[in-house]
Length: 281
View 1 (cartoon, one colour):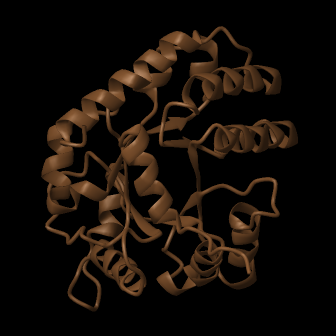
View 2 (spheres, helix red, strand yellow; view 1 turned 90 degrees about the vertical axis):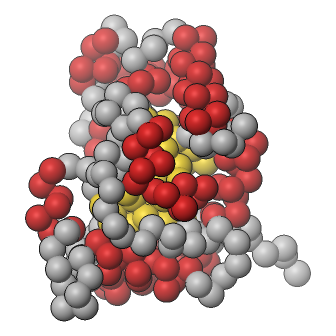
């Protein structure tokens, strides 16, 4: 009889305890490739990823590649993404693929199979998803994730200014739309002990919201660092849920490239500063 698969929340908690509470986004946009002296083509993308994985995958708890920056290079870009996922996980980093998929029925199941089933070449540890077709539309991806010991981060409160018109609108429950999403996440997580595997995406720069962020699962907090999010913002936004927050940055670390040693040093400084400020040293 095979041993049970450890849940994503459990593995994430262990990784952060071992490597520090930081996620670095792998966002090879054209300007960054140019800054590294690389061509904006699949060859430049491959060299970028090779350096980033060499420098960071053995150091950090979580890497978060943005799928769009690979997809824009077509099938050759997706091959690079496949290699990044495999190599980063082999080096001990958890990989959260930022794909923000959201659909219904068999389409959502197909996304789940693509990104969360270990038989897929794109299988990673967790993905980001959109709940706006209705939270129930996420059932296939949540069920698949939990069945394979993977995780899901559901968009709840994003830091882009356009998001507030929808996310902070009041629903028929009297809560905000974001509040409804967070309540649904909490309900999914109640059945299992420890840090659960259904998380939320809440921007580090959204400011005080009044929402209950104690969802029983991890909170991915993009916008930390170069996008303006500070340690003080993390404390103000997340309050008692701060212990489950995974701050995410990209430019603040990747700008130190392309030398692997400089990248590694930048990542180590970021991990140290965040861990010390959040009392996780």
